[in-house]
Amino acid sequence: MQLGTRITYNKHHVAIGTSRQNFCWVWPRRQEGYCPFEIKVGDENMAAAKELLGNTGVPFRQKGDDVLAISVQLKVFRDNKDKVEELIRRGWQAFS
Image 1 (tube, rainbow, N blue to C red):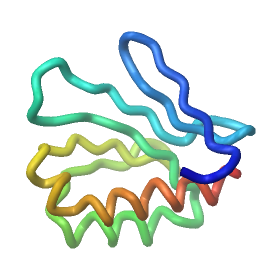
Image 2 (cartoon, one colour; image 1 turned 90 degrees about the vertical axis):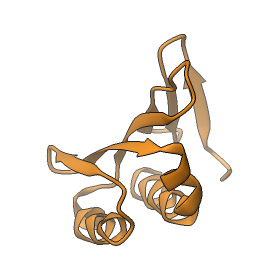
Image 3 (cartoon, rainbow, N blue to C red; image 1 turned 30 degrees about the vertical axis):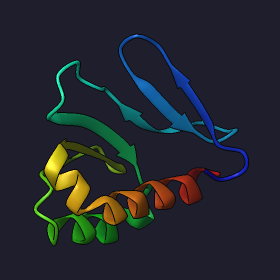
């Protein structure tokens, strides 16, 4: 985790943010299997983020100009953990 990163949560979701604003929201499910989340990557990173996910088989859709909504299966997540980590890193850089 980067310096200046903060995590907030309630019983419905977990949010990851910088000192300025949140850029990632995760809605964990009670049953293991899949987890939907949204990540704000910024306008300038959208094309690269879509290309990164397009090569993995991770289903996603674009919400607005700078947010990707992703619903990832546990096995797919484990196989592509480095790609998801890269997305989170890009979101952190865009909003820190």
